[in-house]
Length: 199
Image (cartoon, rainbow, N blue to C red; front, side):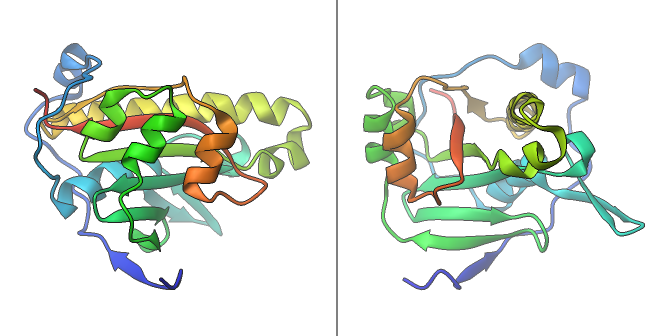
């Protein structure tokens, strides 16, 4: 499969049927999911919440989650039964990496947590530390970790707004996850977030 193959995602929405306050109130970790695939518009909305473009101004491109110095050291990956994908914020599209269902392999790399293989999608938040450390030195690593938290919370709240459940997972083998995702040497996985319809 050529890495150049891309999937255009539906345009994200800027309004929902529930308030931010209600989404915060209802957000809980959900570890069991029913066998129901997400629609492309739901997937696109979740990825937009993670790292979507919100504004272009004066040569800068701003995203949904704050980033120290607007450096955006994060990369977002999606796993589903249809394959492994890399989210491209500019253009709101997915780059096809593999057309294999790697969710079971990802679960194996994460202490065999069933929610990862059971969820229709897994979102993986990764960091390229050098993008931040070139400007901020070692403190750039801390900024990347803070940013991962911002992104994760956006995903969780967007999931609630879509009537979905999600769970944050940080327990996994770094090297094994890197291998499952075929990550470039400079990228490190920080967070796995299974998302789907709750059991």
